[in-house]
Length: 282
Image (tube, rainbow, N blue to C red):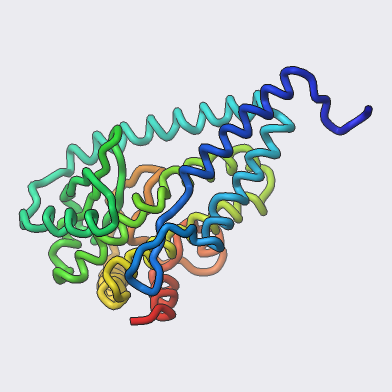
């Protein structure tokens, strides 16, 4: 029987490997999300997870069936780049690492992580003039990096909301989604629609982290306040964004973008994030 794909023994093995991979991926992307602004439940957030996980997963599967060797090579290349970038950023973090001004900040982070069910998270303070934060991992241990300037401009409840946002990225397994998105983008680099879709997925993950943080804090108001202070600081700041983040991380603050740069960006503007938070119950 003629078909578009010849199912020989190798094809069957590829299909089995793909099925196992997708099952592992589906399990790893399950998210415990907030219900009624404050209570966590075990039901996946259907719209966000469909948009963020299944669509690139289907593209991944289609590419696997039509060209498994190239996908494997591309995946290894992307993972190699991610590893190299992580090591490079880790060395840069070591050079800019400073003692935490207030030791109670680690306790604040631990409290937020405990409420979210995330364990073994360490806080790092970075010497930077830009109020920013991001999450990265080293082995099985997670780190939340926050700049000294952010620690200085935020009140305790605002800082806690920023911690909740970063913990949400860990809780929502956004690092894995970003790696998957990078692999899909590299495979479909010649198709602008796919690249734009992946970047839209990355923007959605930022919104979802905000929503999860608001649920953990039982209100979006402190996070909105922290975003407003950050936006005001960036609006009057003319220097360079001297904070370098790993490719698998989501930086809390980004410079304002308009027009085509906004469409092509992998992060939403602070103004759009605030508008999204306003829709949530307070």
